[in-house]
View (cartoon, rainbow, N blue to C red):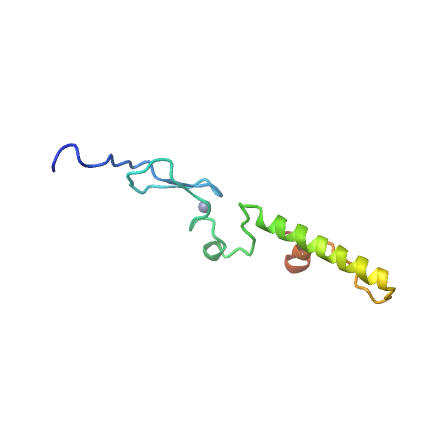
Length: 99
Ligand SMILES: [Zn+2]
């Protein structure tokens, strides 16, 4: 092996930020992190849940709620009696109370 041309090889591993599992994988980089791994991904656990590390579900629910409120206001302005009530939680409707 020629000296002084190869990067340092670290065997620190990769850490999953969701479940905290450390996967022992070697790399030339340090501090590697992943958001989801085979230990906590719903496909492998068989558990039906939403993994939301970036807050995308919250952002979607805010937009959905705002849209429904806006639609209800428009229907109220028009005087339509059959305007649907804004839904409280789409997640609860889809997954029950344990969502
Ligand atoms: Zn994980």
